[in-house]
Length: 446
Ligand code: AMP
Ligand code: GLY
Image 1 (cartoon, rainbow, N blue to C red):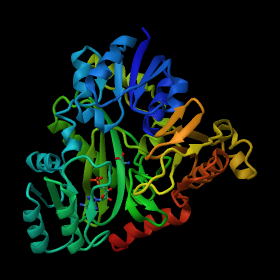
Image 2: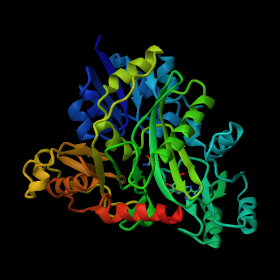
Image 3: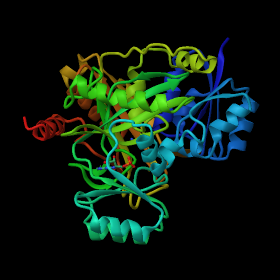
């Protein structure tokens, strides 16, 4: 029986999910607040609706006769969209509202780790009074990370000794209006992500990815949702050992064991420190951009994972193409502090696909690589495609090595057209990757 899948969400991550489902025997329907032209081109139908309104999503799922749903972003999960779909008899691959608290409530998340002895938990305290938190900052011996407990799109954390001083951290808290905050030990090291498919007590992990949160080249500027990311041809990244990767997987396994009944993607954000692998946070969904690194190299049929999850079966073992990937986002000028929404973007999608075979660089032409374009938070209107306040589109290079994948991504950006948009060109370049390797070697005293 062919499946009718409803995809919820209209960003780059969801375009990557749509493309993975397009390779399966699925009839795809999609809904999001913005009309993503990449998803719309792959779907039977694209409905613009408020995805944090469970009734609206369920009503659309019923209209199209969905047999499965994939919920991409955290907002709908936090609003109980997966619960509402499940209640309506449409299996949602995504955790229910209570389980999504592993992402949506950072105070709950840390207490959960402590209660269940999940390894890799930093020293932390939770507060529901800003003045008490400020006092803790004054008294604490060492640097702290200041984290609002709720969702902030990756932009709420301030790290003392890195982005702010103690005084600025206190000022930030007092001015923010946040009522619940987590203060935790500042972790020093290299960050990486491991995402896993979870259902029926099974965990199936995917290759590690490194995202780049800071807005500007050289890891400067404010935090963003993520400016781009890379993965290597195996499970680890160049600055990690196999043992580091397995330490992260053990954290995920121990989390899933403690969360009975979790379904969907469990995303671990880790810091590789001098004392091993620590947890920065968990997310209850694929990463954005990380989904764009992972799904294009997934050889296993994504729909098989979803149907096994729904049927209560063992999840299939995953297989991945042995390819490196580099993803670079083009974002509106001024993102994330003062983004220019409503600017028209001209994207030459066709040329991106041809950019590898038509490259002026012979090595790129011979690389047997791929260039992919993912639309993100743009809005397609009758007269063209417009920026919103969020990330606009991403290109992904797929090749044997990170260096080749990076070159392919740059060629793709050049033909896609990035005028009026900002890009972190340093992501995936040999210099930056080497800095990561040197950083970890220095932490380990090598
Ligand atoms: P989050 O919203 O928890 O993903 O945090 C955003 C970013 O803040 C992370 O990707 C890290 O770069 C940084 N961060 C969060 N927690 C810590 C910590 N305990 N120590 C150092 N940096 C952190
Ligand atoms: N790339 C970070 C996130 O998806 O939260």
